[in-house]
Length: 101
Image 1 (cartoon, rainbow, N blue to C red):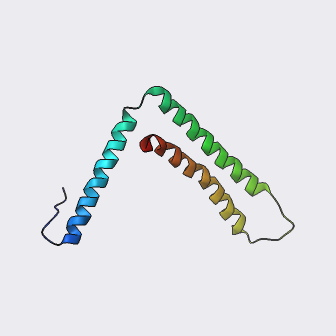
Image 2 (image 1 turned 90 degrees about the horizontal axis):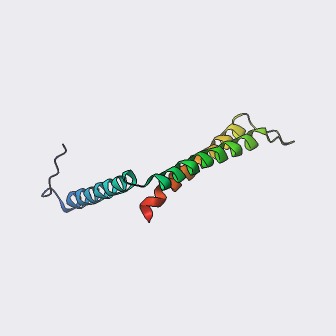
Image 3 (image 1 turned 30 degrees about the horizontal axis):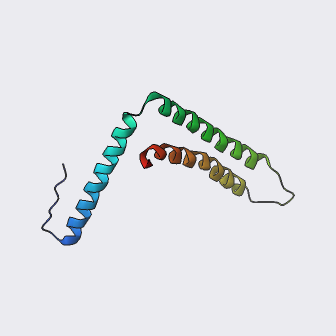
């Protein structure tokens, strides 16, 4: 267990209070998601799969598109990884929706 000295300084006390507030908020969100009914949880799972598939589609289109312009070897792979990551970012955004409402 971590020990927090509230008499050390006001900055440390403010940081500890902010950390505690964030920890309680994360716990509240986790409990809310754990107690979520089956149907919304299933809908989020379907959305997660769809968003990852969308990222894979973007990756495939990015990697198979050819130009007449010669580009360095790593640049298309970088663009492909960025487009696939978009699907993962969308999954994170969809999972945070129940916590916002």
